[in-house]
Image (cartoon, rainbow, N blue to C red; front, side, top):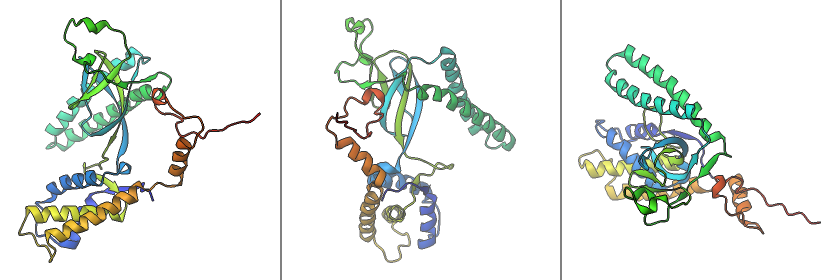
Length: 294
């Protein structure tokens, strides 16, 4: 069945200490990276969390969020008041300054606490302003992904095709989202790997995931540290255990519950296909079809 609860991947590291009793802890930083690799190998959508953010486009492009795994949809909201938009820009710039100040003030507990408190207040205000963008669904205009081989974001200055009228679009180019319009704000719905307060990955609270990550980290330790105490288990044995629990974890996470089955049925068992839902952010895509006979 589907897994909904999560727990910190610190539990996997504690399990390694408990079961293997390693003599040192100089592998922990590597283990965080290995756990992220293992989660990507498992590849279940249920281990990701959905996020939304407002990004400021300048010169046809904007850097994607650092925690983005893949994009669900990109939209533009032209109805937002200029006052809210300007305030949001100011606060986002202030957050960058405060994050840098926090790093510099880690040795001073009083200044660190004061700066963190201010940062939390600003982040709360940013959430309120971003909700202005997301809550008015009637004003949201989802952008189509650009199909042109000469996307407008790539046109040179004074290009004769720059004034051609067509709907706004976006493309993904390396780490940037590029838009057909030169400047403005976009709302991005995306999936990301969730993390705890110490930036350790959150993992589904399921024994299959715990075992899979344990064996993946274990085999990586054996590969990178030949003299690590292995309790009689070699690399190939650890690899076999990892593959077994990886498949088990993927199946456990992807197996739908009753509500997901119902939603899937409503999308596919229809006389009239429920198409063209992209423009309304796929709302009511899984609504049951009711046919009335006169």
